[in-house]
Length: 215
Length: 234
Image (cartoon, rainbow over all chains, first blue to last red; front, side, top):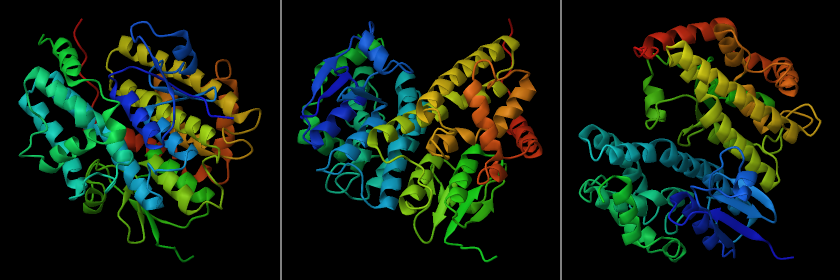
């Protein structure tokens, strides 16, 4: 019996994107169900009653929520291209950086953006980005030659951040401070498995212009 | 008794995140050296081992780079010692569900404890107490689902969520007493209440749950180093 895979998401959500990239890496066919976030469907609320958020993956009728939990689930269930390293210690390090991106890095970046580039906030965001800059270690991706959990976790930084920066007219992830990370962004968004999940840049920038009151 | 110094744990007795790693080490009968940290004056070793967060716990295993973050440490230990008392379930869906609830506990539930401490006004505190009670009801439902009539989240014996939630029981008791309310009680969360008694008396866990004096010392340290916010004038 073929697997039935559905993804409740929102075109333009970096979190939903993480899941799509993982599905693409494994070559899984899925149905994308666009949610109206201002009017969430009964299904979404049923399948994620605790948070009522996207993305929610449905696999043969069973829901899984929380983007990084979903990505690990996809790696657990489907063989093929590995998303996590196989070595236990390498795996722990990958999980650490993925979690860091969510727990510390992205919140700091949000603050810098929300403050429209206030000096202190930008400095703090850059302090967190520096950890990632160092972690790349001359590799094309955090996963080495291929993308892994950490790259996927950093999706927001690769594409959404640039859109927000352009909309507000500030720069947080600068080329001179973050040459490796800048190159990584370029390499990441050009991956076949990533390209097709991204919404057009003009739409992203327009969205952020409205969001940050710059429209 | 000779200590196997291949595994070292940098931690502090009052930290529930450290305690949950200790739970797993005890369950798996892994010998380890405990390196006691004074969080008010962090050691060079800690700062070097966890430069990103500067927090405990950190696991040091032989000559490998240090591993911080309690949940990540637990999964690591479960992978390198899979045969003795497996912590995570083997089914991918149940595993995902376990991880989901661990996220909820760490990101939504437990932060309320600290929020409660730092909120100065009565009104603010009442609102947080309400959230804690709502959270505990969700955890009661989760317990019913995972335990499926058995004694623990993990079934017949302690599993991932027993460890992930069980580590907070010392602080739960402390916060309940200090704020004169019940987070876990026999009316709203009867199954969870029964479960807490099993955790408090479990052979492998009970010694790692800090007692009141340890928590009080830590609490006083927090009150000084991270005092409650100033009350906003009405």
